[in-house]
Image 1 (cartoon, rainbow, N blue to C red):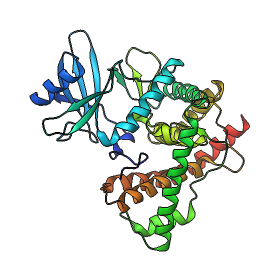
Image 2 (image 1 turned 30 degrees about the horizontal axis):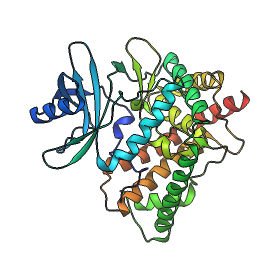
Image 3 (image 1 turned 30 degrees about the vertical axis):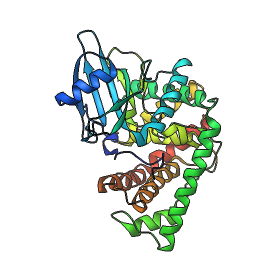
Image 4 (image 1 turned 180 degrees about the vertical axis):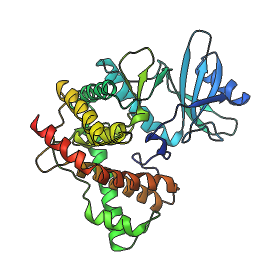
Length: 350
């Protein structure tokens, strides 16, 4: 069984994504992909620490012609429904003027491999870009982008379906939590710490709910090299995430700012500019009296550990590095606790 909210691949590289490398795709894959897409050019396989094409051909590709570059995402049939839903949301956001990466007309397309495997190809314009830097300019642009996204998602017609999917997701996670606490299920490199965290940290952080991105990290926002505003990627998780928008705020602070801040002063300065720009752009997220950014960050990491527990119970591999990522993030939240408390006060005063 495939659950749509579970990660397709580990995402350790999302903490500090590296610029991807490209190498020529095997000749058979290249000719087939060119024929399927109708895009004429050299086909290159994208390679990073977390992503590379598998033996069937699933993965990321760049297609280079003399005049243009395209990006192709190839997914297996099991991921096709989730990817289609994400692309429909991206198209809806693009029509509302959001800076998102949406598929080219006529995509996705089916790709039947000689092995018999059925794959699906999603093609986009390639964006020559960089990842966010820990600068006031970049975090301010991120604040404006996230505010615009939250305002749009608050009126997305697919919210009812997203809420239903979220409720199902929470049900699966709460059942897994119960099995861990009862001793029926053990998972991860540190089962005792997992059990203690699941007993201590609630998933529900409180507050008004709406559709949120829920995967707002550095690998999912590109800053084009031509100086235009940042572009948002990967809306797959948004299609089944109905939570308080403070979830995305905490994730942005965690991944874009605290991950690279040199000291408390820089962390607070960048966080303050991010929150100011988000509020100035009309962002709807508010920190309720009973909430704190520290607790929201912890809740996200513990819920992610519970999702890995669900995968383990299903017999699917998770990779020890993915467990360590979220345990590391829990430790980092503790490290930045005082800064987060200062940002709580600043945000609530504004």
